[in-house]
Length: 145
Image (cartoon, rainbow, N blue to C red; front, side):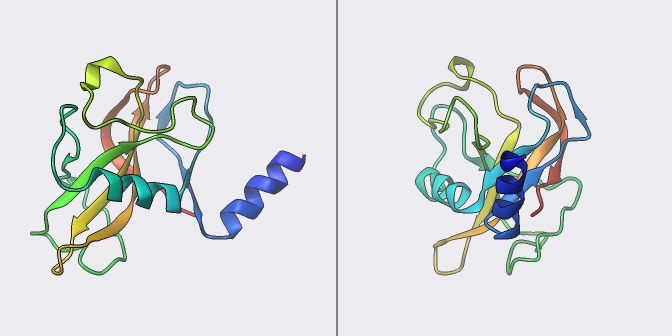
């Protein structure tokens, strides 16, 4: 019972997001992401693609609305970068390691380069479908508090 209360308290603080895929075959029922950690991973990744192929363009095919200045523009260069959830054995995606050599994650942090060339955090998404090995497929859905 204490774990549930702790989770609710974290989410209520607004620093946590819950990512809920449409179909989920993994052993993780709710993927929790710390906003501060997501922002830190985005800042560490920057805008230059590494050996993993990340970060790369996010096309926003399902037109997710972010409610963040600059992120809802149709002609903005938005970047996506893989991140892991709270409780994952793996803590950080290494952009300079080939993607085939690592554990999967269905979660992405999304961001743009603002006019002053700083990173502007837009949000976090999860693939609509999550397989048993945490591989994601299909479009994305927004993670929410």
